[in-house]
Length: 342
Image (spheres, rainbow, N blue to C red):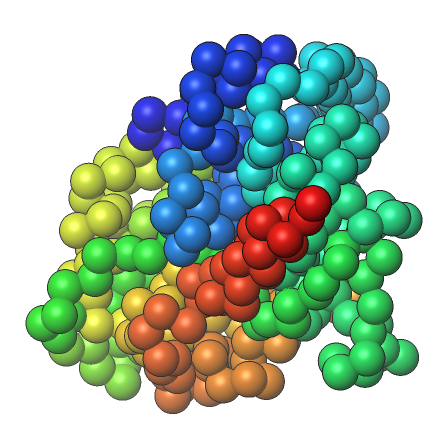
């Protein structure tokens, strides 16, 4: 996120007026996972985002007092982000999260076909405000066919596994040891220290060629982190502080394989994207119908991920979770369409 800051719609339009080059903005739900998906698309396309518009919104696990407050913040942020005039000829938007759709619809109303809009996820909008949507397989219902499903909110839909992630500079040399990544409160899984410790014990008993490191996210509850540190401190497990970003990156790039709690799809897909064997902690799922649970199951079914309790790690092809090149094909088709227009 270095060099990227929050912007209002009026500021975007002001920049656009002053510069003849086409601008790119990210419009996203105010969650790091959604923002990172947008940046992953920009990485593949070679677009430098000129700013990020974040729209806060409640999630399924948000307590009702916070839910009311976040709905008010969403209304305010959306109102502030809506453009009130058109300036400049063309614009690119990369979006993710349902909270972004009203803003993109307003830009579409102003720019018409002079706007190229891409969406990471499955949009809910009833008309095609997006040119292309990167639709995750786990968003399909049991009655939908992967070859014939329809998305009303996009002119073209590209089906994919997992979520798009940014390319990590993993060194060419083989790594050593295991990096365990621990998440936190989520809408599908109980992050249970007892079950995590049991599975770590099993891995250590099978043998680890190198260090066993454990990193915590900002979402990890203090009680969970404390319990894991207390239970594993005498078992040859080293811990990375949640605020030690440099230490985390060294561990990420130096590990031979990964084991991740299933609550963070971004962490899981980033690990798979390295091409190194990746496992997921086998934790209790209290909502199998959630998108998070369905995505994890889809990755397991597809062979990209193995459950830690099964003992055999799975490896994916490196780079398999970057944004697909087909999204760029949609962009080039848009450019060609405008070039042919009278």
